[in-house]
Structure formats: C-alpha cells, structure tokens
Length: 429
Ligand SMILES: Cc1cc2nc3c(=O)[nH]c(=O)nc-3n(C[C@H](O)[C@H](O)[C@H](O)COP(=O)(O)OP(=O)(O)OC[C@H]3O[C@@H](n4cnc5c(N)ncnc54)[C@H](O)[C@@H]3O)c2cc1C
Image 1 (cartoon, rainbow, N blue to C red):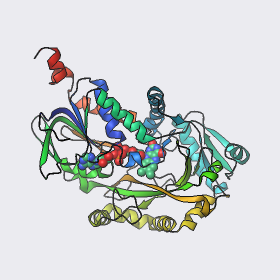
Image 2: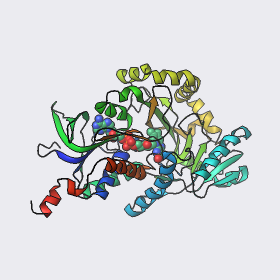
Image 3: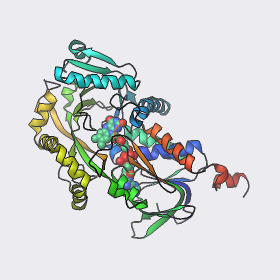
C-alpha cells in the first residue's frame, strides 16, 4: 500500500526479518507513541533467513566467552522462551547432543565444554557412550555434551508475533518496499523506496536502522560507499534432507557433530522441528545467488562480485579443499548420507527426502577473515546491522535491546523531543 500522505517518521527500520522486527518492537516498547515504520522489500515477513533455518533455540555453547554472541544467546534464549510463553507460541526443550565420534574429537569437544561453562549455559552435562545411547538410542559416539535446555521453535512464527506487537503499539509495516538509497540531511535521513510504477517514495526519518540480512552490506554502502569495499556478505547456502515420517523415531531431539573451530557453521546435524518433522543438514556451500534457494539459482552480477572480492580469494585460497568437499557432498547424495551415517548408522539414502534450503549471510573482511561475532555499525543518524548470523534468531530480543540502547545513546528520541500525532492530539495541538 503506497502512502502519499505524511511520510515523516522518528525511526525507519529497513528489513522485516527477525532482527528488524525485534528492533522495531523494542523501540516502541521503550517509547510508546514513536512514529516508526518498517520497510520490507518482499510481500511477506521473514521471507529469507528468518523463514529458512533450523528452528533451534540455541543454549550458547559454541561462542567465544565474552563475545556478543555468547552474551546475547544465553540471555536471548531465556527471553525468547518467556516471549513464547506470553504469546502462546509452541516450543519444546527437547535437548541436544554434541557428539565426539572417536578419541581424536574429544579435545575439541572439551574446548566446547569449557566454553559452555564460561558462558553459563544451564544444565549441560558431559556424557559417555552408554548415556549418549540412552538419550538418543540410534546415535553413536564415545563422548558427548548433553544440553537439555536447547530447544526448538518456529522463528518465523516468533517474528510474526514481534510484528503483531509492532502494529498493536502503533508502528507501521510496509511490504513490497525495497529501499534503494539514503540521503543524509541536517536533521533527518531521506529513505528512498522504489515503487512498482518506477517512481520513488521519500520517507523521512530522524533515525534509520538497517537489518538487511543477505543485503546488509549493500544497505551499509548506501550511506557509506566504502563500507562495501571493507566487508562483504558472502552467501552460504545450506541444503537439508527430511526424514521419511516412518523413520522420524531415529531422532528424539538434536544430534550435532563437534564443529570445525575454523568455520562459523555447526556442521550437518539432525534436528527435530516443532511441526514433528526431522531434518538433516544444513551443509554450507557458496550460493551463486544471495537469495537463491535452489542448487542452480544463479545471478551473474552477485557471483562475480563475490568471486572478485579480495577477501573471498584469500578465504578460498585457504579453505578450497573444505569448500570442494562440501560441494561434492551437496551434489552427490551418497556422500551426504555417508557423513550422516557416522552419527546415525541405521540411516539409509532411501530414508531421506529432498528438503528445503536456507542461505546464511556471513560477513567477510577484505583480508579474508570471516566476521565471527555480531556486528552493528553506526553512522550519521543511521545504524547498520552488518553481521547477524546464527544464533541471531535465538538472540533477537537481546540484539534489539543492544541496537536501541546504542541509538538512544546517540540520539534523543524521547517523546518530548519529537512530534507524535498521538501526543499532539493528547495535548490539544
Ligand atoms: C540455514 C540456516 C540455519 C539457521 N539456524 C538457526 C537456528 O537454528 N537458530 C538460530 O538462532 N539462528 C539460526 N540461523 C540464523 C538466523 O536465521 C538468522 O541469524 C536471522 O534470521 C537473521 O535475521 P535478520 O532479520 O538479520 O535477516 P533476514 O531474516 O534475512 O531478514 C532481512 C530482511 O531484510 C530485507 N531486505 C534486504 N534488503 C532490503 C532492502 N533494500 N529494502 C527492504 N528490505 C530489505 C529482506 O527481504 C529480509 O526480509 C540460521 C540461518 C540459516 C540461513
């Protein structure tokens, strides 16, 4: 719906994924009466990462102690559970095992154990092979971390519930609204939104926050052209298989490998979903299109931009073997199944049906290092979420609070300093 009336707001949030919606909700919770708009380019909310993930309520085991991820995940999980309780959203704490297959993997498992302790992850336990099989009778391994507080939920349902609060608290959510440019004026920023008729809408906001997921680098470059040069989003697609309904009993909760510490991804795992399905995956291969969910989805400009970025060349030079192995497994089902069989020996290729895919937005620096932690960058009356990979859905309420705290430190958006139709009506303007 295109508005031709007053297009002036206190805050404009770009991106209708879980981070944008949580942030919009947090602004309105702090400042009822704030004139706020969320701009989302798609016709539905949670269309990308938020709607294409494993649906895990992570407990905070993996992350470097002291990192934003560690802090936000442990706290975010509790807050997400409280939010689900208050909003009648179904979730389940079905627990997760991180499994060391043999003695060579135990030192890496113990590093994770130390992290879990340092991060204050509740109720984690180290278990041996026998106890492991009591928890997951069809799994195998010599030792494991058992995290009974890890859970499952639909993150798109949570995001829609955030959106419902935004609307109820007076915020506006505009769909089909792709943002293509920002112009910084003395006291406000003009946000240009492309219209289907080829014209542009101009939205004026005192503060802008972008939460653009797979296009977060492009949105940052709209306010600072050099931003795109320093750091780019590399899209890593993850494909899932789903277990045939008659084989779902093979997995009670979640079974994860010990991840490679060099990579930000957790490795192919088994996850029970809140709708009862069981998924195996996701792997991690370079996506040839940022929002491309099929193996052959391709965008020439996006792919050549990734391949010509100096950071990508450095990354590929270092990890080309791992990258090729992942690609091989992606195209050859028997190779994918062999990997899964290491954790669940009874599984056969015929038990697995092709499943959905997700594309992760992973920020990569020019020097070839992957950005491990969440990252939020501030400019002139604008904040950009530059890196919000997993466990950002679990951490969304805490990330939103961090963003709003930072914005309020930089700008006075208190009701007394702003024009609000609600307040104006109340005081008789
Ligand atoms: C395969 C996979 C598995 C994962 N598993 C988990 C998990 O189990 N648990 C967990 O906590 N996290 C998980 N994650 C991570 C989690 O899904 C993401 O961290 C989270 O969804 C990020 O939310 P977001 O709002 O930043 O991004 P997104 O959900 O991608 O939203 C960004 C939005 O911005 C919009 N947008 C972009 N550009 C523009 C523009 N120019 N104008 C207007 N709108 C724009 C997009 O259309 C999109 O809707 C997983 C991610 C993937 C991909």
